[in-house]
Image (cartoon, rainbow, N blue to C red):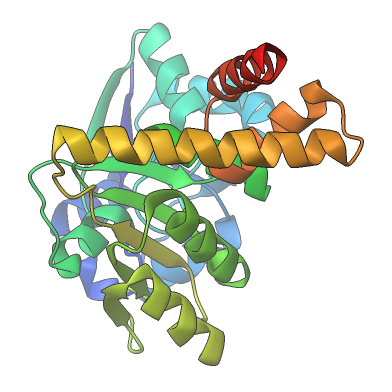
Length: 286
């Protein structure tokens, strides 16, 4: 039975392809690639003639059979367009299928944009939370970020350049004006790491629209005293209650008002619902 090699490829600079990855790509019988045209450019650069088959998010189920059949006859390499397969890139389904079929699965490790950005950010690296690409809809994005407000270690987010401004604005609204590092074009000629508070990063990229894929690292929540935390929670509840009352007065149903405020403030819907119940009871007691 063959081995599935999960091979990391350069995120920019071709010199980051490891010697082990070069050997594996030359020796396997087949390469499962996110985009065969993109991968063929890499292979041609290094004089590698190994056959390649496309394997991406839109055809992964259809391709599992042929790739597993190739694994029965020999080794197969799995690559994405850049970085490590399965890490916000296609690959997880094939890895799971190969494991379930009893194949050995190993990795030729290499570049990961999230780790590269973390190292260059200058922020604490003791722990971090990797979020990948956040939801495109602002309310869903804020709702996901809300429970992470008190987390003490950095968050790492991937984003496309045309959605960066919306992401930075939501990060500032939900998390506050924290230090961040916005890294783009990592390892490439025009690599840039902009380190500043979120408000300054937003202003910078409003004036200078970004190009290339972006990785954002945001500092964790600063340590605050219990009294300050309680005061912040009280203020947030007051803000939610005021907003709920205004929306309902404007004709929105309580249910829809709760859903909207939860999205706006990045709070769990259950929390906002409880605030509505408490404020309604208080109004009824007056």
